[in-house]
Image 1 (cartoon, rainbow, N blue to C red):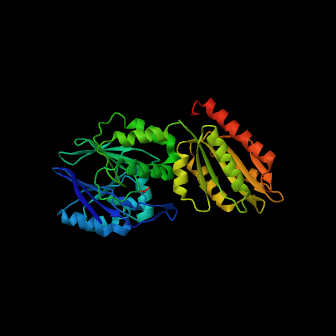
Image 2 (cartoon, rainbow, N blue to C red):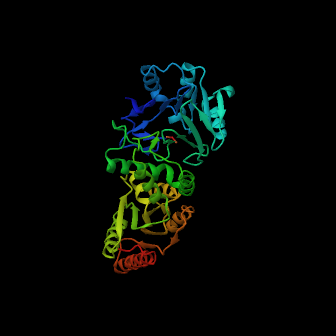
Image 3 (spheres, rainbow, N blue to C red):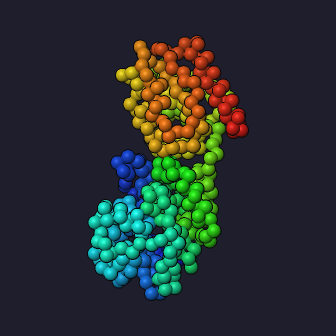
Length: 396
Ligand code: FEO
């Protein structure tokens, strides 16, 4: 579906909505589809296209440009080299032969690697550099690591529009040009932050600091609807990227013969009794994006696993690797679970989460089904977590 609409006079959304896409990077679930937003900015003298679309939808972009009767594009601004935004640049350059690709020096190197664009097609820009389109001016703001090293933002000065590509975006297919259903967009944006941006929480804060003095009327990302009330998404990012944690314990677990499940059920109840919010995820069927979202705010993670071939269950290993890679702001972690005859489940699992800057609380790992002393040990762990949350002043 095309997305050819006017944001403001001479500024158009010309990207594509991908209602059917359900997987990104062969890893990330897209329950709500996505969009690849591209923007056309027509100045009195020059015209710029800001980002393109995923190569599967090049024809939609080109049709949108054709229907707007765009005869000439002078600049194709590549805010980000990842192919869902850059992948149609070669085809755009074939149609608009005089266009130059405007990007950071790092992005140029990556685009040459990924798309084999000739050297003479590039204009690289420094941080803070501007480009005049006549009555409109683009300012380029280098913003590395949202979420690749080459990323930049483009600010359209006269109209106060910040084009942010992935940053502040959401995987959400919608017919709305601007945010209307805030709850839905919040959910999609949080999922996007959790899966894509969370590992770069600290650089996100630096990049937000860098843009804080810009007058921003509109934030136009390259996924999801456009924000014409920018504080909504900026406030959400400030919260997610802050060091503040909530009184929440995440319990991802799996159970093979029911012992770990009995422990988890008892433990979750014990936490709730102590005034703690719990989010429990059975990893045999969990949407891993939901788990990532829960990790955005939680203070504590307690992983539940049986022992398989002397180590954690493979699905627990997957979840632990993912949590480690996403680098959430967790403060505490522990492990609960059961074994049949022995193993090194705790040591192996603890070794898989070096990126989590957490205090490890004494695990509760038992032999066979849980018995009276084992339930007492779970109560002891629940008490310890409640005490830690109290120290952080987050206990309800
Ligand atoms: Fe939407 Fe990093 O690409």
